[in-house]
Amino acid sequence: MQLIPILIGITVINFGIMYLSPSDPAERQLVLRGIMVSPETLEAMRADMGLDRPFWVQYGRWSLNLLKGDLGVSFASGRPVMLEIWECLPYTVSLALAAVIMTMVVSIPLGLLAAVRQNGVWDYLIRVATFVGGTMPGFLVGLLLIYVFALRLRWQPVISDGSLRSMILPTITLALAMTCKYIRQIRAAILEELDKEYVWGARARGVKERYVIYRNVLKNSMLTIVTLLGLSVGYLLGGTAIVEIIFTWPGMGKRVMEAINMRDYPVVQGYVIWMAIIFVSVNLLTDLSYRLLNPRIRLSDEVA
Amino acid sequence: MPMTQGLLTIDDIRVSSARHEIVKGVSLSIGQGEIYGLAGESGCGKSTLLKSVTRLLPPGLRVVGGGLAFDGIDLLALPPEGMRRLRGRRLTFVSQNAVEALNDSRTVGAHFLETMRSHGRIGRKEALRQAAELMASLDLSDPGRILASYPFELSGGMNQRVLIALAMVMKPDLILADEPTSALDAAVQAQVVAEMMGLRERYRAAILIVSHNLGVLAHMAETIGVMYAGLLVERGPKGLVLGLPGHPYTRALIAAVPDLDGNMRDSVQGSPPSPGEVFPGCPFAPRCPEALAACAGTPPALRQVGDGHWAACHAA
Image (cartoon, rainbow over all chains, first blue to last red; front, side):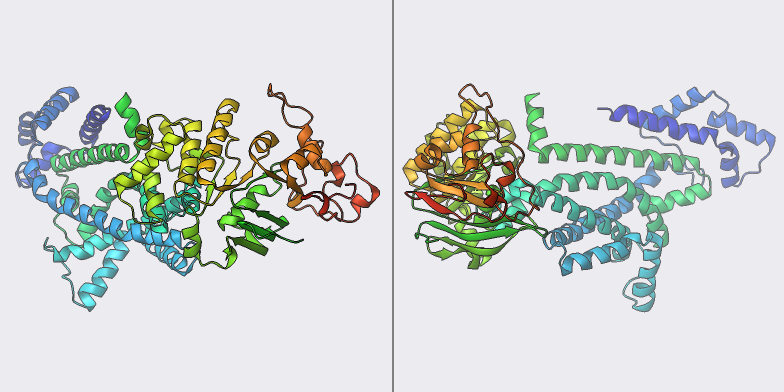
């Protein structure tokens, strides 16, 4: 339950950075709304936004509103930030989820294949492919995919409209590097597991190889795999921003980049808070599933 | 050397790693229901010899010569699936470290189920019932609870018994036991040995047991073989090998058996040769208190020194 102090810390830092940033939110708001900036209007705006108050008062007001689900109003659109985020969030979450599913579906069988056929043809092919795929930066992959599938073959739209069909290329872009990394890590985890004495013991009892692999080795390696998955959520959330911009996918990453360019602080703050909440909850889920998968931890919890 | 056709016939088997030979041509034969004990210091190749029978040698090791016949089946010519069907059903293995040999994230019952289902169709309930019955005969109270437990919840002795029960569950003809009690303390050791003997009595299984502890072998085995530096240097009926040892190494091992209070007595002088060492003569000569001039020159062959009793020593 150290999650609560972590979340509080994030809000303080988040608010503090905005507070310390050199540009004046009141001025930004006036500019974005197209109001003439004069010393008088600026002063009035500052008082109106509570910017003349001390830091802790401002933070207190902001975080109380946060608890009520009020993240303020976008300087640019004048709409509540919460609403804007709720509109974009499903797109980002579905993109990230699709990437996770694709990563798992591809990397578990391939990692297993490479490990079981260690130093065989498949293993070498997979290792070379994952090396190449893993070192390509996301923006390059995205541009290449657009060039080949959208411009040359015309199988896919160049600009995503948020439909399921237009999700394919962004998902591949997001999942490729992660899939390559996972294949290697799953391969290593399974090789490590295969080396354990109980595997020899099971074989010496004539246990069928498919029982050895699927019910013993793969099951035990899932512990490592689940931990990896939890850790890469942070990468995924960051990674979506680039992909969303390349493919003009209407998710949070794209929205927040626009907000950053316009110095639309409430939107940026809202984005950071939401990412933090998601990140922390996924870590909690990882922890819980880890306990569920590992009887040693599960049982010691029950006793305690 | 004439070999009688037994249950398991090991004929001049050689096991080698990339660099050197670990088992340098060992022949022995085990009859139906016979208990054969193999003694020797660690590193003499006895475990490797035992594992070669299962054809599951550690990576890098392979059989480079000789033959393995089990009940008329040429093990070395058997396809992998045929070999798998034999393992666990007709010839089984009990290893030294039970805690490592069991999968910590699966229950004991799951281990029984996967073993029994790998060798035939059997319902879950029936399989667990048979497992529980077997465990009850191993003096394990409350077998139901043990079957539902994970290996890490059980003591070392308990795990070792589970491993023995797992090896026995298909009623095998031959049990290969690699130091099956060495990881246990003396009191538990005696009990596990007694239980193992009881089970063997019931199923009439032959046992090839490897141990550095001559005391355990003296208690269990009918026939004893002594290995040194990858070679069988003496073999024969227990009474003759322990009573009238023909090889100075055997005598040194007997002298090194701890007494009843567990005090170590004279250990064998010097240390066993490392696997790569080459000897023109007898490999034990450098450590042998009785070495003759001939010992450094020519390797001694196994010679008959008594009724069914053979030793590889120039002085014997």
